[in-house]
Structure formats: C-alpha cells, structure tokens
Amino acid sequence: MKVKVCGMRNGENIQQVEELGVDWIGMIFQSESPRNVTMIPTHAGIIPDRRANFSTHSEVSGSCKKVGVFFDEMAQNIITRVVNFQLDVIQLSGNETPTLIRNLRCTLDPDISPNISLWKTISVSTPADLATYSLYEDCIDMFVFDLKKMDDAKLLEAYKGEKPFLLSGEIGPDDVARINSFSHPRCIGIDLNTQFETEPGMKDVSLLKQFLSGIH
Image 1 (cartoon, rainbow, N blue to C red):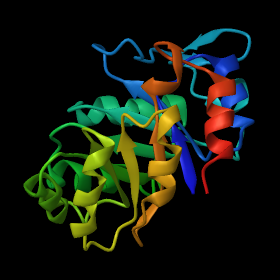
Image 2: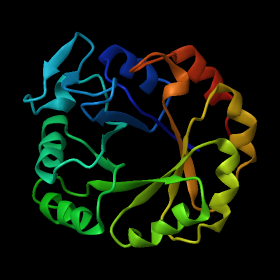
Image 3: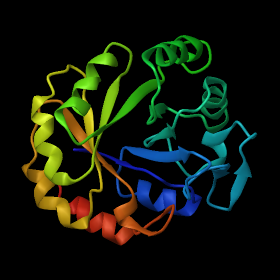
C-alpha cells in the first residue's frame, strides 16, 4: 500500500513524515488554500520559490517523490512550479481538459522534466462522476479518486480502467478497518491530508505513524 501525505509546507514536518516511509509528499499550489505553498520548505526555514535547486535545499530526499497539486491553474504557472520545486508529479484537481494535460506533457517531457508523472483527481459521489475517468485515461498516468465519504468506496467497483489509482477523501485515523477491507486490482495506495493535521499544513506525525502501522 503506497501512501501520499498531502497539504504539506513545513520543511521539518515534511522530513518527519518522510521518515515514516511514505511514498509521496503533496504540496498544494492554490492561493485560496490555507495550505498554499509559496516558498520552498526546508528544515532551517523557507527559501523563495525562485530558487530552483529544490533537491539540494529541501529536506525531501530522493526516496520520497514531490507532488504538486493544482486547481485550474494556467499551464505556464504549473510549468514554473515544476521547475522551481523540482516536482516529480503534477496532480490536476480542477476542471482541466485532456487537451491541457496533453500539452503539459508535450511541453515538459523530455526537455524540461523527463518522465514527469501526470495525475488527475476525480471527485466521486455518484456513478456518473466515476464514469468521467474515460475522458482522461489516455493522457494521465494515475487517478486520484476523491470520495465525499468512505462509504462511497463501493462506487469504485465500477472502475474498469487500466490506470492505477489512489483512494482519497476524508480518510482519518478511524478508517484503518475500512482501508484494509477495500480491494480493487487498480488501487495502489491512499492519499492522506486534513484528518491528520494539528493545524493547516502541519501533520501529527505520531497519529500518522499509528495509522500507517495498521494498514496492510
């Protein structure tokens, strides 16, 4: 079970979470969000995002991939964040079109960011929501299915696509049994965020550790 911890912006907290063995650290680039990242997180403090050498100055090591989460952002702004933050993954969580996604890939790979991964978030509360995956399957590498409530996970049984997906939504410390009981051949992991926070952008490392120890 792979794990993404999203909504992070503090360098020391990122380092602590990475030490739990998670696979992806998610950084949100949305001005309206209290978790919006405008500076590069480091252990010592923050570095303005014009500093491109993120891997040198950040506390995120090469073992943990960096995911930039965007909501209907202009392509040029996404590309700038990819370069300045040395992102490994672009997660598109708005109403982005397949054309925009294809153009992003063509622009970035291979000249700017070889092999960058492109994910698409789909909010799922009805079968019709899930069915929209077919619009994106030929232009993305993975889906993030964002559930309104964990009981909606049964809707994902209808997913017949070939691309892998992460289970997302308001997954919290009390959902260990629900996560362990969920099974789908394309589900490779989970996406965690607000339910493990002490404040916006700061994760409770002990709570995360306890939760992850119960996941299999």
